[in-house]
Length: 611
Image (cartoon, one colour):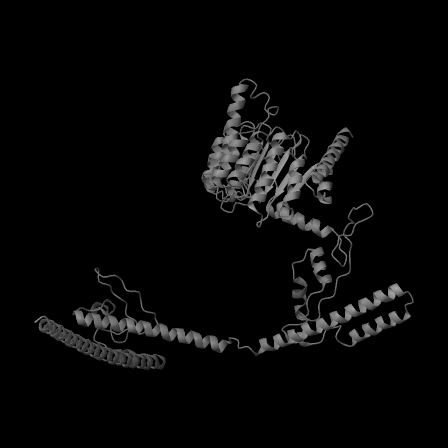
């Protein structure tokens, strides 16, 4: 009762100071923060709060009396200045508070000045016991800064760096608080270090879940640092990329260190089951006191399942609100009738079906899959909806009858309003259904790939492959005939007889092996065999492919002739351009001659004038 009374007094003091801070910064107290502070806790979500209200909350956290649990959550689209101001307020709270015991940072960008402000606050904390940093992408440098700040704070008992991007280099930094703690205890109390282990303050749990880049090297460094430790009780390494070497290091650690009660190696797919079983067997019987303080943490899958179960226990109304009693306590699960499956797959979902899936824990759209036998394809979407047929008209008539029988004017106005709203929704639904019917008719008219089309595509690819192989063989034959050597594919030593269709390829020791020709192509027996012999010796399908190759050769020769014609035209044009250039140079020479004559005439005239 005394503890409860003191907690209520702290909550009232925090609420009162929060209201005064809001008045100071010209803002209004929010009910959510007032309720949280009355329960001696505070959860700040940066992407849902403005700057003025954040200033008021930071002013509230400056006092010695602060919430015992503080959580700071940030989204992706949060301003860096806003996050920096929030972390600065948290750092001031860590320094001034005499009651803050738990600090959680989730998704906050810890870089530069923001990280320095946090480390300064943690370094000067007096009552902090649990530090949780989750999804903050600290990296190795940030992890080292945090661990350097934590190792000199004896009040911290739980350090959790979950999904913070810790790699192999960060393993030594994470183990440094435990090493510093052992040296401090042994140096200060050399005789009582083993007698009063639990009475000494210091780190008891180290959690690194969700850091797959830690690997075997980082885990081995941590295990070596904890070999002679007498105070760490639990080490969590879920989903840390632990393999064979890491498992062996943990097993050797448990053979030496008998203080550890928990070494969690779950969610490590590269860890052999035999090694994991040996580690589990070594841990059995160590938690003799049965204390839940150092119990096994839940995996991410278990946390998700519990959240789904909690969500499933709550009852829902048609609007999706939680059904609560008079005192605000939620009722147990309210069983409701199972809604009917939709008769048409084209009609949009009703809210009732979505709420039923959510409440019963079904996968989204599972009711559609269960009702797949009632309607397949898009043809049923063109059928009229329930409200657009005779039943819809019956509903309208029923509403008109209710309006005519109603005598209360207020209720009559409401019925008229809902009647108009129902008519508008009915018209809108009819438009959507007509649009869906048009879309389904267009989809039915589209061309689809049937078996015959796919077979034709495969045949075309096969023909193209055959053509490439035959062109490769022809090129090798021409090259060997021009150089006076025999092609490796048709070496004389590879001839086994006229009746053999696929002779083995013999490669000379000095040449690079050529990839084998697909078995569907019949190779020639010697280097003098022509391409016509290959086609005639093949099946009618291969002869048809040979004709196609001849057509391709003719097209290539025609293209070469066109290219030569274009080259001749280009050379003729170059000759014409050179002729024009010569004419222009000749004209320039004539113009220079005329200029010289004119200058000579002007000289003669000047001479005559001077005479």
